View 1: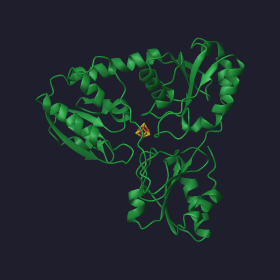
View 2: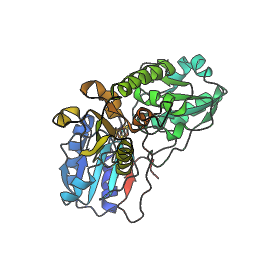
View 3: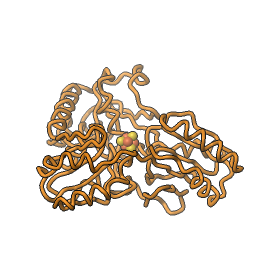
Length: 344
Ligand code: SF4
């Protein structure tokens, strides 16, 4: 993983005239957070480290930083996301060291099946390898399109589990470089195009169409389970980058218009055990789309996304992935600052 550039963080804090900062970190960078804290305190900046687990740029601890009287937040491990922030926030992404070209080379015959004009996308961890990947593919005769994406992503060609805007370009197929299934399945569903996922660690390449179909079958089963539900808990997250209050209100209105009982429930960390005591037949999660999709087996009640609810209510025919679109920052709000490039 990328080494946190302590000096660069210090220089940015000095530009902000910050005297006290909060450091927020994912599980895997706790050691780096502690080193950074020691370094900053050695240079006259008071530091508090947040002990809360953080999963993404969508959950900055800027409110907590403000409550603690900090002038800035250092958010380790994730790339910049445009959000309505309460204190200046320095996003310090982590980049994987693995090369991606060897895996592309190994799978060039499969990649050719996508067509000549292809959309190239990846996650923030591999974004620094995208240029090399593009050059390699162009040398092999491909026309490579790297979409700009909306304000939720930090770099052209970057995708998130909740945002595939950079893949929505004129191309015959989508080439995803990265590990894991959730992003490429989402890409296949969101673009409706043949999608190949090339894993730079294992060197494997997997077609996502079959995976996407399997996921859709599971999601249709959830929709069917909720068919007789009369009462719905509509769950929103108070995490800043997952908070979709207007969308949640639209969902409540839709449910009530269709004669259902609906109630908004706000949570910070959404998990079923905390909802057990409520009396609802089913839930709609209007937050990170991964919550209902990755975790549904742990819910005793059916749990849907907003687009799945529209299918249930007969308002939509085809299956559609739940995406979160980017917001625009108001110019008088505190800045999000992207270290190592990215940002808008
Ligand atoms: S997929 Fe979920 S955790 Fe990841 S950025 Fe989107 S809302 Fe956050």
